[in-house]
Image 1 (cartoon, rainbow, N blue to C red):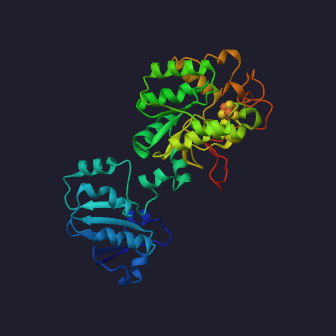
Image 2: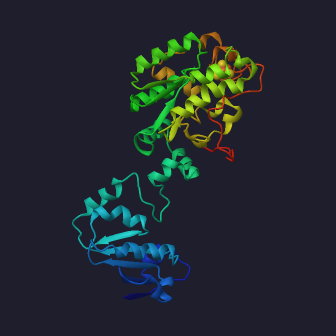
Image 3: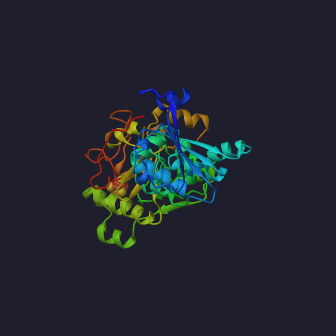
Length: 371
Ligand code: SF4
């Protein structure tokens, strides 16, 4: 069925043409063969696809073919016997409008369109499916999505939806750690929290860990230790940190974390861009050698961190007042006294600035993140 509106105006927008009663409108049954359609279908401003019964899904296929095979860019409208449960998928296969036969279900249709915040099946739209988000198949889209969100929203989505049950937080229990730990506790205090016990931590860090775990009522702290046999073989005298700091970090941090990540797809970190160095271009979601890292505080400033501490009355690491701005193993950490940046006291006198647990995936491009 073809209806030609005599008032068509060349060059005007689809909506303007329709509003003025112009343009070609085509109505097709759901079982129409798109390959057999004439040239007029390409010049139509609107195609209506009729569903004879909500149980007949051929209109979905036809809409998808018109969009993906024919490249139809005009308006697609679903008409006929449709039910609100079909709202989301009608939109996702390319329909712009829905005019169901029954007009008494308007409120149900409105609710149905809002109901689903996540999708599992790919379609013609740009919505990322949950499987694609879990595997980080489209990091740019993930980062674009999270750019609109604050840190707590990102964490909530990551913990409760996208990586539910397959995500943990890694914490150093250092000077800023209380912020992400507090956020995690607000969402789900049973979230696994990893702590890398290198055997070289300050006593104050261990004390701070107990304080925060108790105060925030975290129930799944996982203390990760280096493998005893590897330690005996590679660091018999306990001075590997002096001879080869990279090898020591690999033994005490990188490998224990890699083992603990079995069964997890993503790891939350508390890193921020203002830490500088390799972190200056830190994205919210990144792929590293052993999986995905979620950095909800990536764009936070030092002032925001301090404000969060005050707002939530969080305890400070006992070494903060002694000039330590970033705290790792006592063997490799010195006070920075504010000079040379927040991480200036780490591995003092060496070129080393990171321990290697977030090493980029092979071939990963480092691109400045926008926000
Ligand atoms: Fe070893 Fe120092 Fe790395 Fe700690 S920070 S694991 S002591 S090299």
